[in-house]
Length: 148
Image 1 (spheres, one colour):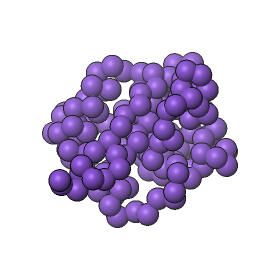
Image 2: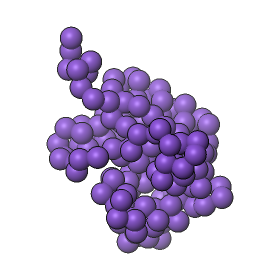
Image 3: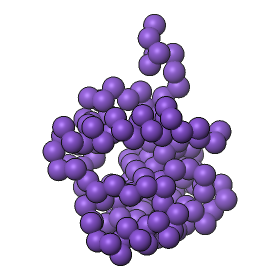
């Protein structure tokens, strides 16, 4: 039995409305051999319902990390980030803003709202796999996260 089989999977909440980017993330996690459970929220309202374990998400695991797009329907990524970091129950969950926006105002505002890091989406699968590996290595190997 290798370490991946005996380890606890990483619970990731991906907040992303673009099905192509969801598929890219799933493929990159698989290619990077990250032992994970992925929950996908297609908008900001659904993301907060998942975090709060509202029906039908009452059995969804608390995420170890959140990958958050900024350009979302119903409730923007900035609004979701603000609500997560304002809530004592969720504040300690690392939020990685993963977005296509390179606008300085978005970067500044994300950090002002206490995002843990801000990453511009890579365009191809190889870059994205490297990104996922670096996220996994940093957040789940180097950094000590608070208990769930």
